[in-house]
Each structure stands twice: as C-alpha cells, then as structure tokens.
Length: 491
Image (cartoon, rainbow, N blue to C red):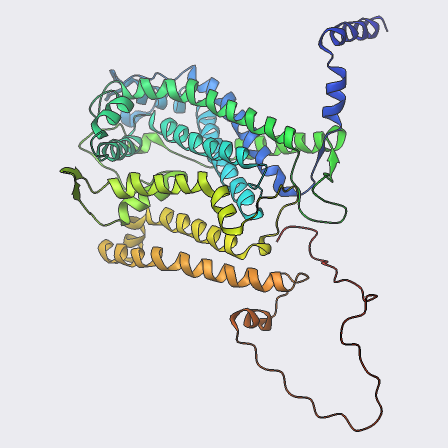
C-alpha cells in the first residue's frame, strides 16, 4: 500500500513537469489497421532489434584486424595455419565461445529476415499505392532504409575475411574501379588503398557497428514518426474513408498482438540459428587473392547484382577518351538507374495517372493494371537475375555448357518479365471489370473480354406479336446501386 502511494506520488510529480499523461493516453488510443500486411514493417523492426542484440554479443569477441596470426583453436583442419586475426576470431566464435555459433547464425538469419521484410513491405506499399500524396516523404525514407540495409548487409558479410566474403569484396573493388574518371578515388575511399589491403576490415567494422546502424535506427525512427503524424493508410471496406482509420486500439489489443509477433520473430530467428546452418566460414577457408571457391554464391539480397554482372556482355567503350570497363554498365549504371527509378516512382506515377489528390484509402491491386504490370515486371526481373547468380551451379547440375546456359538466360531475363507483366495487366483488367471476382473464381470469358476475344452473343428469336409493356429508355432512379462485395481486402 505504501509503495503504491509512493509510486503514484512519483508519477504525479513527473507528470506535472513533463505533462506526459495526455500524450500517453493519446498514444494508447491510437488505432491500427487489422490487415496482416501492416505487420511486415514490425517484422523488420523486431529483426533489427535482434540484429542489434546479437551484434553486441559478437562484437565482444570479434577482432577486426588483418594481422597475421597462427590459429590454435579447437578446429583441427586449421590448427597451425597462418590466417588473419578476423578469420581466426570468427572460427573461435564458431567453435570455442559458448553460444558463439548460435549467435553468429542468429545474426545472419536476422539480417536475411530483416531485408526480406523490408523488400516485401516495399512491394505492399508499391502495389497498393501507399506512396501517393501525402506519403511521398515516407517512401523516400523507406527506399533509403532499404539501400542502407543492403550496404550494411554486404559490409557485415565481408568482415570475416574468409574466401567467400573476400571474393565478394574483390568483385566490389573491381566494380568501383570501373567507374570512369573517379573510380580509383572511390575505391581508395571505400577500401583504404589497393585490394587486398590492411585497412578495409577495420574500416568496414566501424561502418557496420556504428555509422550504418545509427543511420538505420534514425531512418526507422523517422519512418515511424511520419507514420504517427500522418496516420495509417487502410484498405477499402465498409466504414473506411480518407478521414478515419478502422482497426484496433494500441492498448490492449494491438499491443498484445505486437508482443506476440515479437515472440514469433525471436522464435523463428533463434530456431533457424540453432537448426539451419548458414555461412560456414570454416568450409570456405581463409581468403587468398589467388584462390577461388565454388559453389560460392552471395546472399540473396546481392544475387541480382551478381546476376547482372554474369549475364551482361563484356562491353567496353570510350567516352571523351576515357575507357569505360565492362563491369561499369551491369555493376554501376543499371543498379543506379533502378535506384533512381525507385526514388522517383511517386512522381512518375503521378505523371502517368494525373492523380494529385491526398489518399488515406489504398488501391486494390486490380485497380491500377499499369502499376501492377510494372511491379510484376520488376519483381520477376530481380528474381531471375538472382537465379542467374547461380548459373555455374545450374549448368553443372543440368550437364550443359555454362556458356550455352548463359545465352539462354539472357533471352529468358529479357522476355519472361515482359510476359509476366503482360499477364498481370490482363488479369488486373479482368478483375477490375468484375469487382466481386477473385483469381480463384475468375472465368475464361472475363479474360477473353479484356483481350477482345469474346464471342458475339447468339441472336434471340423474335418475340411473338402481341401487346407488350414499353420499357423505359433509361434506368429507373429507384434501381439499386452495384455493391462492390469484394472490396473488403486488397486485391
């Protein structure tokens, strides 16, 4: 009883100075939509929390140095070998530190889940039009968050100085060097000298645990602050309009739901870390500039870039007397063009549609066939490029020459995304014309109508002569409106 009175007095004392009670009541009464897709952002948030916690543990034992050392740990095949301090500490984390391998793998899996959640969340925003006015700023913040997370994932993946990560760094260094005029300066700024050098790992370690996580945390905070300020968007449905949000209050419904999701993310991350092996650096061995390893593939979030590098023809040319090496177009120019298109998309969409209104209610995917087709084309292109990063493994598995397989992949990457986009456009048009239909219930005649292939209706026989009531030329005002019974959820 006395403790409760003291606690209440303390809270009143704090509230008189901070005036936090009203703000807390307003926050607890905030309404969140109930649709499952709005939880994708929270999966990314909780994966980032897992990354920070496991990263703190790993940083206590990792030695970010390229200094030569003799490995004397418990992993027999490497005992007595001369390796870098970074690689030796990674092996010791995996075999000699209690819980080290678990935390290493949880950290890696959390990074993959984090990036996957951001990518799927971005797709949801794209296909439903959540980037439209007034949410262009949050779209820019989200794209920046995605790119920063990709960069931090690549840097963290490269810290261990094993043969796999060293090969990836060598590709990155060559790509930076291919930039005309300023390539050598950019490579020196990033790597601290020629590759391989003794500065790249300490420099990347500082970026990985300090600068980039702080930037990611700041972008997440800005993203959430803008979200709170502008309110949640929501899917169309009964009682939902551009002036309200229909869903569950922060307390207690949404809070307990969010805590359950946090528990699920932690359970999945630690379950994968305990049961599914990822990045076994002891298998790859220490990095050596003269060595290479197969089957060695990058993580999925970098596979599309390597797919571009593998499939693009070796084209070199000169501009104003400066040589443009072959890695520049697939490794720099095309990824930069894709990033610029992402940043500019809200304004490109506005230019095409002419829509400048403020929106609270989202589009159904079927409502914008052109946007849906563009999104499906882009997603299918990235997926195919990711598979192209494993062209040597697939060619070996199919027992075909890798060059023949690369030629076939070049055709597939150019043709299949266009076909996927065209199919998505036709399906969206057909669904938009029949609001109550779904993909699972759509009939062939609906698609035929979009393609202009619908058969003409058979002529009815003439009615027998006799008196008949005249029909009005226009529909009666008392006729009921068409009800869009399928608009409760997004397409």
